[in-house]
Length: 250
Image (cartoon, helix red, strand yellow):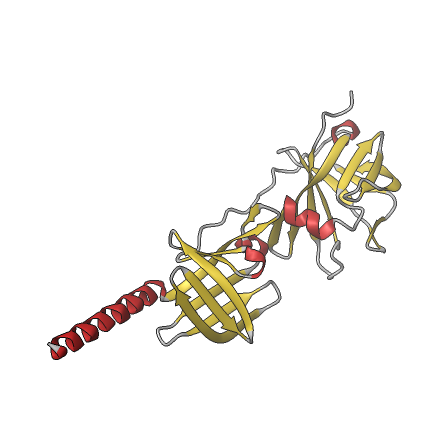
């Protein structure tokens, strides 16, 4: 009888181990960063030039390959799966992810979503440039719609977060004069404009984080205005797209 009880205990322990291993095997392999959440808005990291992959190994180690827009890095750490909670430790930093519907959600500020497959991303492609606009076509109230820089795209919520301390968030154009303002509506002053070869050229530099940039505005057929310049001060052109927020003045 004692032998039978011992045998049953061994079988029970083996079943628990097998179930545990089965759950671990279920999550083995590569998990791709597919979405990020900022201020409740879902962002596509691939469009922003950001990538991250966790490769969960059977021996409890994990390899993280990441590119945050400044070059690729590869780090190794450990992972533990407890029920539906994944804990990853890399360089003494601990991140916790919840597993549900074949995806992990969590990480720093609970803002990252990892999936088995990397989803297809559709970049914003602006409409063709209006070649012969009138000054009146630019009149109106405009706000940041998209930020395009060095091959990456930031949608409005991320662009606003990046530009919130600058005078580039909002734009009002009236009677050949541009008025830029920050997220609080504080105006940077009047900037006279001139229509040259289809572009609305700013005749005075715009202040952004103390540094001044020169730029011109272009009107696109899908109803957005674009401004191109070295806005991030990295020696590369950045494009800010503005969309209209109010009816144009009559």
